[in-house]
Structures are given as C-alpha cells and as structure tokens.
Image 1 (cartoon, rainbow, N blue to C red):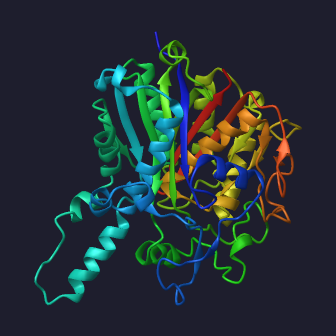
Image 2: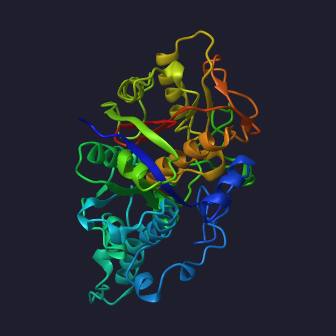
Image 3: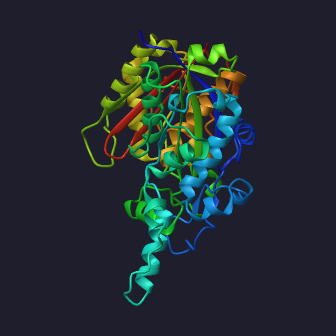
Length: 414
C-alpha cells in the first residue's frame, strides 16, 4: 500500500525576505523584489535589473570553510534547508540516517563559479590555474551532497534538473520515494544563483526578460497586455517531506499533504511552451487524478506565469482546457510578479506560498497587472493588486521549463 506524504518543515531565502516569515509577509503585502542589478555592471545589457536577495550576509549562516568551497547556489540551499529542518522539529539522532534523504534541484548549478574561473583563465598567460574547488563548486548535485554532509543524512541523495520545472520535479520525486517506502524523511526543494553576467546575458540575447529598465518594480506583470518578459530572481526554497504516520507519531506540525504530482513533456519547442497548453493540461490532469480531486475541487492555483507574451497565454489555455469556458470558483495568482523568476528554485518557493495560503486562508496577489490581455480567457478569476481572504483546502502549483518540461503538484489539507 502506498504511504501518505506530508510537509512538516519549510525554509525560504528570497528577494522578498531571507526567512519564511519575512518572505511571506512581503508576499501577502504585494511588494516587488525588483531593483537595479548590483552583482555586476549591467549598464550595457538589454535588461539591467533583477530580483536580488536583500541584506543577505552568508557569513551569518555558514562558516568560512563552507563558503570557500561552495558556489552561491549551494550556499542558498544550505541556508534554506537549515530553516526547513529546524522548522520540522524532527530529531535526527533518534532516526536511522539511511531513512533520511535529500532530493534537491537547480536548473543551472554553479554558473557563478564557471564564469569566474573561465574569466580568470582567459585573462591569464595561458597557464591553467583553476581552483581545486572549481568542479565541486560547479556541479549541480553539490547542493544535495552538501545538505547531506552538513546533517549526516545517508539516504537517497541526488539532484533533479528540468529547467524551470526543476523544483516541482524534486518535490514529486521525494513524494514518490516516501510513499513507496524508500525513505521516511526527504529534504527537497531548489536553489538558483543566476544573477551573473553570463546568465543574464544569455537570457538577454534570447529577449526572454523584460527590458523595462525605467520601472523595475512594475516590470513583471503576468497576464497584462503590456508584459514583455520575465524578471530574473535568485534564492532557494526548502521543504521537509515526511511519511504521514511517522510525522503523526512524533507529533509534528503538518502544513499539508502532497496529494498528487505529475510531469509531462510538450515535445514542441526548445524554449517555447505549447500554444494550446496540451502538455501542461495533461500534467495538471494526472496530478489531480492522483490526488483524487478534479480541477473544480481546487481552490487556488499558483500559476507558472512569468510575464512572457507566449508563456502566460499557453498556461491559461491549459487551465481552460480543464475548467471549460463556464463560470468557476478557481482563484489564481502569479507571485513571480513579486519574487521574479527563480528558475530552478521557483517551484519550491511557490509550493511554500501554496502551503502558507492554506494555513492563513489568504491568497497573495498578482501585482503590476492593470489591463488583462484580451487573449487571456475571460472566465479566469485572477487575484490582482491586493491579497484576498479565502478558505483553501486544495491548492495546486504549476511549473514549466525550457525543453518542454511540465510539472504540477497538488496539496491537500490534513
């Protein structure tokens, strides 16, 4: 028999706050994390702003040796996972270390390290002078490895990579391993540190990001007629997934149950989503079926909606494929309007938003959206400008990534 899986701990490091409570209060308040890029001189770039972390000093969280041997994406993972583990309250020394695993996600891995080391080599005299930490800092699986090393977790351990669907992939994998009895606890989520010249430059070349440099705070405007691309974000989100009976036995606080999760592929284009949202619709359908509910039972959907002209429309088409064109009670919002797009960390952050929305009976808004694109189906109930109260028993989160990856997770009240 498949086991039930619940979430007992969360941790967040985001452009809206360096811990869960700060992040959540700013999200509900509808604040934007966007500002001029400070990590490098972006004055000649098409896009010159992003959602960076604010007042984050890694030395307050990690010792010098860990900082020296890790890329920023791993540092972010360690900080967020520390908060989630503490929040979960489980006592590791009373558990078999092989019962606790880590399944983490990162879409890019150590881009910062790759850029720095390559630049140093290019500026040299041709003599290779790479750091011995170059490869360990670069590889995407090092975040999951370092979380396990830091805590002594000896169970299943690996990293999922599916572009911007990465975090949902990691959550889905953790869910499946626990319900199959392969682990009792898994730390999961995602982290990304993409605000570097090479990463920003690459997305600029694709014209995927907003170029509204005169108004960074309002640049991310999902569903709006004037949307022109996403805003880059950075940070990490962590969740502790736990076998239900194990959590109940130790008296753990339970945020929600993972009801179902699914992935599909668009098989359509390297970077563009399927215009009719066929793959996205199927991912939602499968996740809902697994959760034993229908789209009409879902009270809130946190959309992937990144504020791109094509992506937002294909996702709303996908939702309508399930809802139909009649009146419905599904409420949706696009919180990337505030956090920016955290790429491989987006799904974890948005899963946390779903959980806290259920806890506090509130739906965070889509900010900056003033005129809904007339191509967006008119029967969608989009929460804009301000948060609204709502009793939520079932929530759902979508993530989609380059390569045609679609990932959906459904959360249910316990």
